[in-house]
Length: 111
Image (cartoon, rainbow, N blue to C red; front, side, top):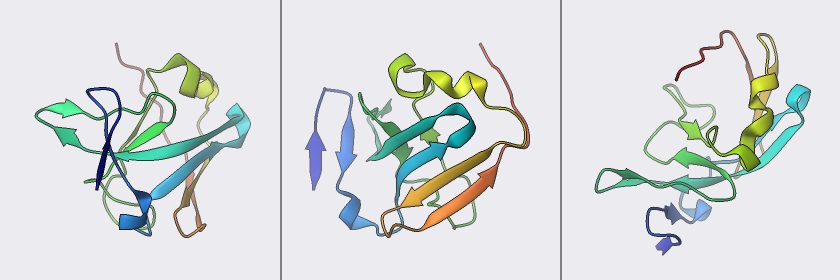
């Protein structure tokens, strides 16, 4: 079941995947933000206006492959991301309330 919010945002119910990420925490940057599932539809990336977005066709926490989370270009969602340093811990909570820990190993700034 799709929920359509603003025209370019396509989200799905987290109950469809019990391992979907639901929250990102980066303690050193004081970040704790909910995660919304989304798709790319007709070449447009679904983007939450209030949460970090997980591309539902990418991996989930604990699976092999890349987890695609985005929201870095939204000042009110992840503004403190610029304070993250190599070695910082990133914690992803999934829909089963399990926590998955990742460590920042490199930082790339792009224009």
